[in-house]
Length: 427
Image 1 (cartoon, rainbow, N blue to C red):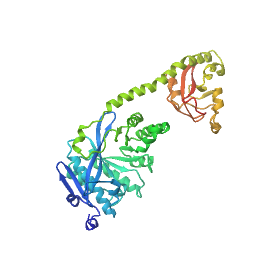
Image 2: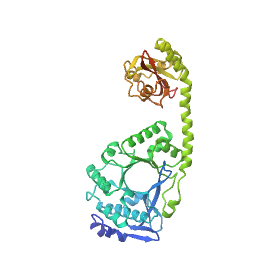
Image 3: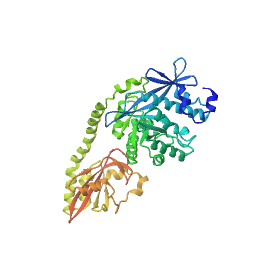
Image 4: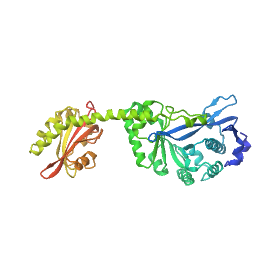
């Protein structure tokens, strides 16, 4: 790349970039600093649709001996902001040229854009609008990915994202969950899609708590109005974690590596049907213990309620429940969710209490109406309900709660019983 070109190229336009592209058969390549640039596409799959819904465009560079050059080395070559801008636009030009030639009139093309490029130069990337017009690729088939990292000009970044949206493109935040990512960026930019960084998946593979955090993060992003893509899926177990987390889209080596042979892509679907069948079997297995829990405690639970209805004290009525080693506590709530009397704690739970959480132990007159198990019980009296494992606020330990509403002196009351999700944990 000659210095004279970059000196006159504060905002590279199509006419200046076009000579840098060469068509070879049905594909295009580009020249930059003596390197040949090629487009590689990696499929992105919708789990629910069980098919490809898009491709991420990735740049691949080769030297004169056709040896691969690492992408990081390529993007370290520009000496000036102008040349950095040129390289970014050249890559996008190349990708769109190549994607326009694929016989696919439906799926998205995911394009990376650097925040340094987004926030430099003119406020809006008029180049990109011109590029779409020249190639005829509809803007609604483009997803602009913004790498999640700090930027010196958040407002300009917001304006630029708004520009792409106004063009008709979708926008995505890339690498969310790593480094500088935070939900403030989600609130400010309102992306259509959030790509979760693969480090979240790596941690979730080995750490059950990290898996719960991943599931919760996906739920929060969905509530924020974002579709969620999990990238970096490399193994079958990770694919199952992605499915269980509730993400919408997946991408990674397990399904398909980035491919330079672009004509092959439409003919290599992922076998998501098999994965979903396996997930259904696994999920059924994990649901069975919950049903077994209801079946096991149904008798003792209803006997406790009969005793309460006959006028027995809580300590007498719940004795059978409290003698079970997995039961931590029993308590009553009225039809407004307000606790009646003190909580009964089992002897084994008292022995294992963690003194650090002593301020949370007293629950006299506590209001449990916000808890789903309380509202479910009130909505369906006489039915025994059970929760999924959750963090108990009275001791910061994982438990499940059994609850059943019954009539007592003309009003509903709810008997609740907490059972340790892991009986060996310290309370």
